[in-house]
Image 1 (cartoon, rainbow, N blue to C red):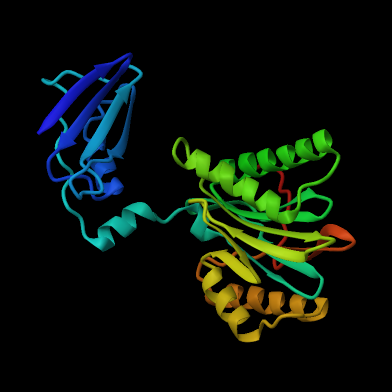
Image 2 (cartoon, rainbow, N blue to C red):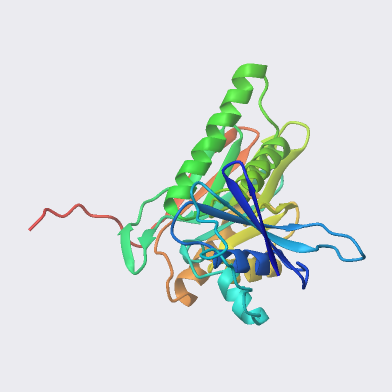
Amino acid sequence: MAAIVKADKVCYLATIGGGCPDEYQCALTCSTCYRGVGKVASYCRAGGGGFPYDSCVCAMSDGAPCSPSEQQCVPAPKQSKSQRSNLQNPPDQQAMESIFGLVGDGFAVVAADTSAVHSILVHKSNEDKIMVLDSHKLVAASGEPGDRVQFTEYIQKNVALYQFRNGIPLTTAAAANFTRGELATALRKNPYMVNILMAGFDKEAGASLYYIDYIASLHKVEKGAFGYGSYFALSLMDRHYHSGMSVEEAIDLVDKCIIEIRSRLVVAPPNFVIKIVDKDGAREYAWRESIRDINVAAA
């Protein structure tokens, strides 16, 4: 059964009966309400009687039609776990990229491919995906190009604004938690399809590395990776990584990961950039190039 309630410029349709055990199924149900006009949002409304949720609520706003005759939503069909997994994790730009990093003795190193691709096209092979956040922090990001650039620049400017206002820089942990908070806020509105490895060095805490994915999960790690290249990088780091690595050992392990990705991955990017952060600051360490961009005159 469905109950329609009209409020100021917003219409709420609650699908009652059967409960709302899954917010994803509720979103699928409300998606059938959309008629190409306005906005349709969904959420599960808490109920009682021993049930965690009682109804799936669809909120139509900004001119979305809301009359019983034309706005009758139908329940979403049940889907298998594999079908849901494919819908929730579609193959996209994030998986085509490779970024990884690790923490050594007093430093952290991150590496990223430098390919700018779309679909089956490679636009350039010298795209730097590791941003210097401030003097002692690095952000390696993968994801949709627009989201990646816009979000990392947004974080960079807000970190700089905090230091300008307060006279002290954010610690790496504080910057990571701020980044996670912004992703979590955007997740319910207009999510950024960005995965991030944040590396930094603090006088008290030393070097650290934070893993932040596009659904705002945050973990402090000693090694991490994103993209298809992570299948090879993580396995190699599991085998060869140990705490207290020297810079030479860490770079040798990074090179092993790059060689493995190039030789085993069918969509392997040719070029990588490596950056390091320690007590002396964040800086570029090296490029690993197998091809170079060449400017060719138009025919």
